[in-house]
Image 1: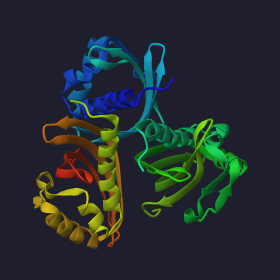
Image 2: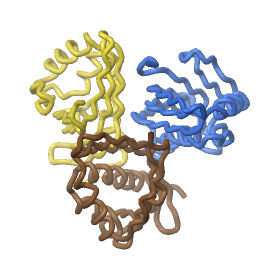
Image 3: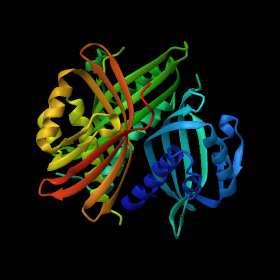
Image 4: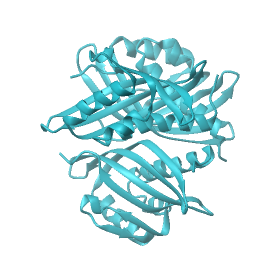
Length: 136
Length: 136
Length: 136
């Protein structure tokens, strides 16, 4: 089933909001606020395991942010459709991360979101990342 | 004339759907299903001629996919407006293609779509590609 | 307050329209037409000062276009919300500019737009640029 245009924009705002929060280095609360309390952040395709719940997401980004100086996550190709549980969305991310050590990391990834409606709007119930192009 | 928000999303889904199908290497049917039966795929600006019809599109991608290992087509700057025949859309594509030979190709292109309504939703009647930045 | 889906698309069209006009090298009028008469184009974060009014914007791009051979401004992560004065929007830009001297410049930037409604649709009242990743 297709989503309303309003829902499409609200979901795109979550997808882009995730990138904006991750690029606002140190803004752990901003990232966590996008996830449902029992969310799953699945990085197993990157060999980085599966992170559970808002607490797990917060810990992950606290650690990740510690080494980052500047980020830019360009999100494109955002599609979305409704599901029994809410909605699912897919996006491409072209990510650049400049570490405090001066090393630049470039990642070409695909993000798959499961989203649920809440009083605070759409929240991420599950986020799975995969690589579009293997790391160089 | 301007399109409804629902049509704007439906057309963006075709633009992004084209990238997703092309990046799902080997999915010739997925690419072909986005085109009208008598579609024109105009690659003359790239010196690659003009491809005619779903059959031509299918043959083109069958050949192209054969040499590809991984693709990432980042689609941005999607604009669209209605026309007498349906709609036209423009998008930018930042494309990366890793060949089976290990060579990476990066293309900065513009896509112009003519779209027609059908029972299956919007279909590509004509797709023209041009380069934003000449190949390095 | 949130904007209607129609306004979201109209504002995205201004954001993308700015990129398209800047990439249509020499189209000074096309760039200027997107700005309100008393617009402010704030490039101070780039050490390039603040440009005032349509006339200032026109002079700036006349000079800038003179050295450019090919441009590609990929706009992503477009978000927007209403304000007392109209609307504000943010976008990421991944910009490539090939100079007539053969030098390629790549910029990873954030654009912040203040927009006002007019008889001609949404216009840029203020555009502020900042870097997502410092220049290499």
